[in-house]
Image 1 (tube, rainbow, N blue to C red):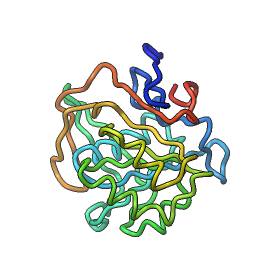
Image 2: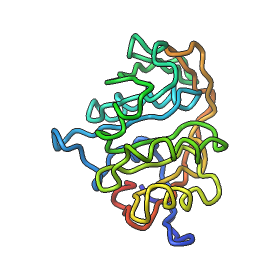
Image 3: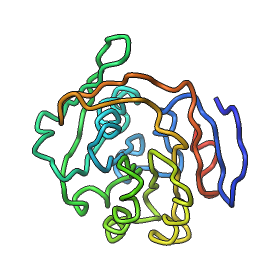
Length: 203
């Protein structure tokens, strides 16, 4: 449910209730199964671990999750878990894990950078040779100031870009490659998008 919508510097800002809502694109589809979406997570810190454990279950298996990390050997079991504040555990499913962007980025419908804002520009530049702006959307889990400008400069003026205004949870890694924990979740989050991603896409 959209609670708030406004335009900011040529972009649209939306406030939504569910993180999983951002993983049901209407403009970025897999070229294989039309019902299948491929999301590639970049980095395996606290937020990367949580996303890896949440997306498969939150989308009822409609989204295949890939992970680009410098330490793929730590994710051998491909089923990372996340523990919620009430003690419940959810298990994720990783379709593919690699440290080579050439293996993951070209077939991605959504690319999500989950690492620190200080590395965003450097990471975007490393992804650029493999990123097809006509096929894929790219976003960040935290909306650093003017990050959309950086995305347009690196990926081109027609890139479909989104960023979460705040990280959706307080979280931490319990065991690298295997388990994370959400210690507190926000009831709503803001999303900023470039104007070529619609309100429908955000929903």
